[in-house]
Image: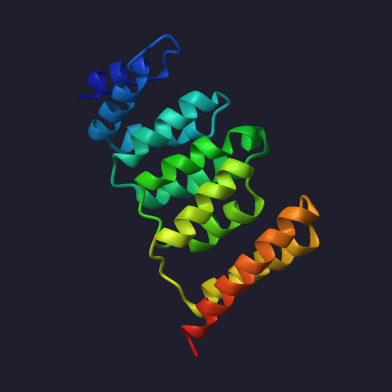
Length: 173
C-alpha cells in the first residue's frame, strides 16, 4: 500500500500533472499515519500549490484537528499572505465547529478573499461557543482595533463584529 501512496503523492506534487486534484483526493483516501506527517510537512512547505493540494488530501482524512492547526498556521504565515484565500477556501472541507476564534482571526486579519470567506463561515456555520471563546475573540478584536490595516475596513468591521460579540454574549446571560 505504501508504494501506491508514494506514487499518488509523486503525481500530486508534480507541477506538470493535470490531474493533481484527483491524486490529492486519492492520497487522502489512502493516507496512513506516515502519510499524515508527509502531508502536514507539505502544508508547511514553500510551494503553495503543493501545500494547497496537501490540504485537500488532508480534508479526505479523519485528522481534522491536526490538519486544521497546520492549515491555520499556513494561513497566517506571512509568505502565504497573497494566497490566503486558497487556504481559507479549503476550510469548507473540514469540521470547523471548534475553530470559531481561528476563523474570526482570519476575518479580522486576512486579505480580502480570506476575510470574505471567513465572514461567510462565521455567518453560516455552527460553532461551539463558550464564554472563554468569546473572551478570546474579544482579545483579537481589541488587537485589531489598535492595529487596523486601514481605517475604512476597520469601520466596516466594527459594526459587524460588535453586533456579533453582543449576540454571542447574550447566549450566556
